[in-house]
Amino acid sequence: MDGRQVIERLLNGGLDARYIAVAAGQELETWQREGLADASSGESDRYEELLVNPALVLLARQRGDIDCGGLNYLVIRYGNFFQVVVPTGAGHVSVAVEPTGDPVAVADRIGRLLAAA
Image (cartoon, rainbow, N blue to C red):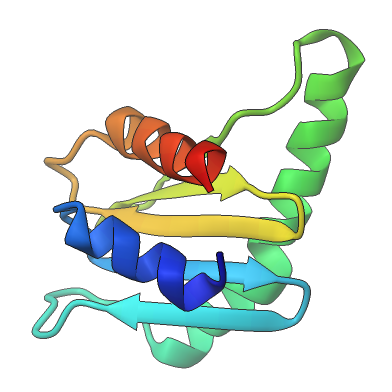
């Protein structure tokens, strides 16, 4: 399943997201909800997906593999939203969730989608 298909399946499944990105190496597919208040800039999001999130996944995965049973996902709480990052074999899926949302439920949903692919 390619990045666009992952995004479409998450949205068609009713996921209430501010932003979705699927990264595989330097390939990046993104979607952002229209009319967002306090949205990050597109350029900032691009660097987050290509530099920051891969580094965070690498560090957390290496730590998790030592004696924690691996890494399932990361949840980052920014001031305006949660960022859920789920590692994939080739990169990661990243979803921005409203502060009133449930980032753990979103991470579990992404994990189920990826496992079924």
